[in-house]
Image (tube, rainbow, N blue to C red; front, side, top):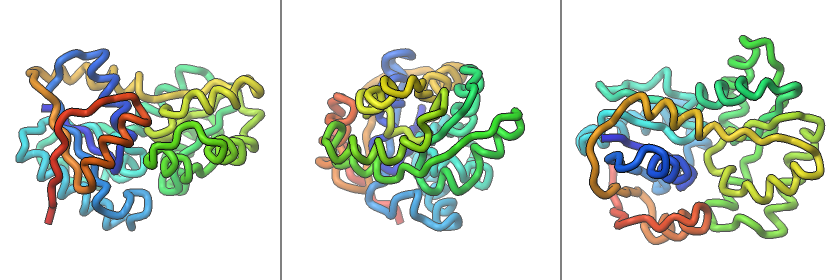
Length: 248
C-alpha cells in the first residue's frame, strides 16, 4: 500500500500523476489540515507529528510512503521510518533541476523549505548557486480554491520579479503546479522554464513496484468538505469518499 502525506491538497497533484502514469496503485492519501501547517511547526513538533502519522498509516497497511510536501521533506532524515520506505520531494527536486542544466537557477518555496537551506546545500554540491524566494502566500491561495484571481497574479509577480533573470525556476512546493497557467504568463514575458519535480518523483515511485488495486482511501484531520472543494478547484480532481480522522 502506498501512502501520500501532505498538510493539504498539494500532494493531490502527485496522486493524480500516479493514477495517470502507474495505473491502479493502492493509495492512502492523508491530509493533515487539522493541525498547524507543517511549515509553521517547530522542527521537533514537525518530526513528532510526522512520526505519529507514519505510525497511523502503518496500521492502515502502508508499506511505502511519499511525503508530498517540501516543508515536511526537510525533516525526513530525522524521522523514524518504522519499517516503512519513505521518499520526499527534495531529492526529486534536485534531480529534476540538474537534468535541465540551468544556466541560472531560481527556486520558490515555503518559508521552512527555503530557510532550511536543504536545496541550497544540495545544489552547492553540484557546483550550482540557487537564488531562492519565499512564496508562502501562494499555497494559501491555492488551498482556498483561488488559482486565477488578480490578487494571486499580483502576488506571483511580486515573488517572481527578482528571479526574472533566471533561466529556470524550481517549484519547491507541490501546490505551485496547480497555478501553472499563472506562472506561464510570467514565463512568457521572461523566457523562464519552471521545473516541476513531480515527474522525477513518479519515476522513483514506479521503482517501488507497489502492487494491488482498489479505490483510493482519502483521510483528513481537517474538513472533508473543504478538502474535496480545494482538490477540485486546484487539480480538477473529484476525490472519492473522504473520512475525517483524529490522531492523539
